[in-house]
Amino acid sequence: MTRPSGRALDQLRSIELIPGFAKYAEGSCLIKCGETHVLCTATVEEKVPPFIKGTGLGWVTAEYGMLPRATLERTDREAAKGKQSGRTQEIQRLIGRSLRAITDRAALGEIQIKLDCDVLQADGGTRCASITGSYVALHLACQTLVARGKIKQIPLTDSVAAISCGIYNGAAVLDLDYAEDSTAQADANFVLTGKNGIVEIQGTAEEKPFSEDQFTALLKLAQKGIRELTEKQKKILG
Image 1 (cartoon, rainbow, N blue to C red):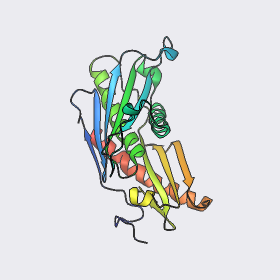
Image 2: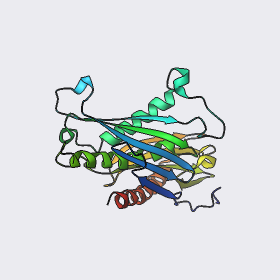
Image 3: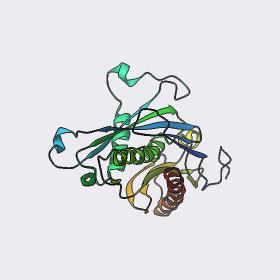
Image 4: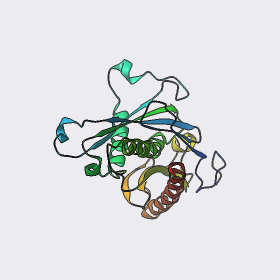
């Protein structure tokens, strides 16, 4: 089976992580996954939401958005519509959950870190790229806090990254681009830690149910992809 991109079934798109891309953010990373490009920035606020104020715990949250010409045709800004779509809300909650899963909130203290994920160009896998890039931005923001003497050590217990896998033309494939994602028989997003912990799995059959064996094949592909992404994150962060 030949993929539209010509990649092997277990091959990631070309991945580039550019740390410190945004001048003013405490942490930032431009992530390029093939033709999908997402700018992730981390902002530190020395206050937390009211619902955890006084607990001694920190908070990590995220916002997500797509620029009007991130896709083939222009889409209106959600701000112009006066509300976020259900898809946007679901994705930014996923990003926030993924990052909190590897954050020691007690070690962070009553500090909030907000991740903004802005899709500059979309070709499938924008939520996965956002999580992978946001981890780098979050780590850099924590480094900034340590350098400023606000916290004693980086309060992250593991790394986290995300990748999509799917059943395309009957075969399990890694890292779907839009051409594959739009016609896949099944697709799933895997959020895993560097130590192979499972944070979240989102899977959907598009035509007919897929089997346990097919799911296992997708999980194995995802684990391979996450190992490669984790190595790239480590290399960038030193």
